[in-house]
Length: 135
Image 1 (tube, one colour):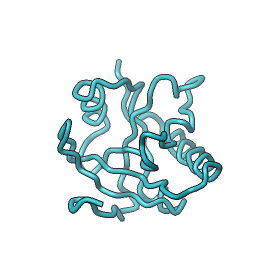
Image 2: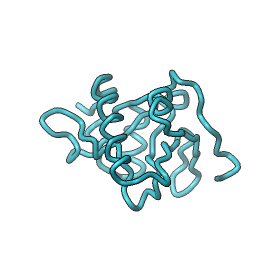
Image 3: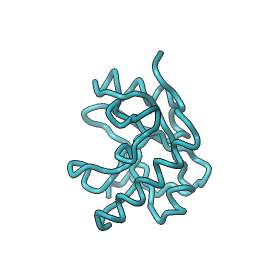
């Protein structure tokens, strides 16, 4: 854990997640969008709603990082806490400065549990709806 990393505890804070176009199926966000991949080392990248907007998070992701996103979806710190998932502020300084970067920690969990939790996070995000989508 880096010195700047700290636990997020405001249950109302939104966490913005960029969703790759392949994870939108029939207009719904797939649970894969809320599941860390092996390269993520058990941590799901999100952006803190207290430090950025859904549109700003999208712009940073697609323009500065040059990655693909169908739009910004959100879950809350409280929803993560209800699933016993910790959330940490994790500001990035390289290769792109991202003061709003945070992570939802899935480390040490069994694959089946990760799949179950990602389905629940996806359902939370779907219930809130897309927060920003490009025109």
